[in-house]
Image 1: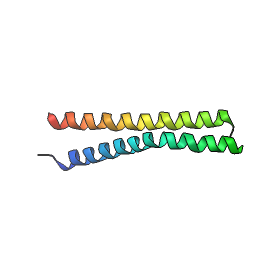
Image 2: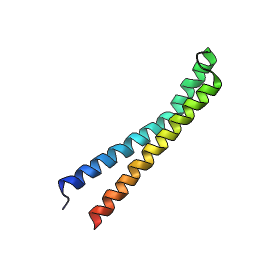
Image 3: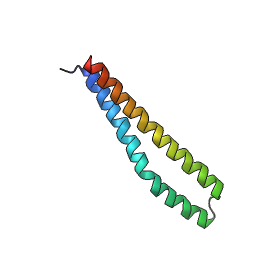
Amino acid sequence: MMSGMEELGFAIAGTTTAIGVLLQWQVPRRRMAMEEEVKDGALSPDEADRRLRFFAIAATIVTVIGVGMLIAVGWKFAQ
């Protein structure tokens, strides 16, 4: 039986992972929006590349942290 802390840990880890996955799904939309901004002249190509790279890296980091938390909480629960 899980204690309240383990349930909370799973909830936080699951939420973090879900947020990371949602951010991953947003990368192509973000890329298209930035391409439009570059076409409109509102954003330079270099700045668009930097922003997109940051967004993609942040999404990956959040996903990895969430999965790592899920593994850690699962490991702790298994002991």
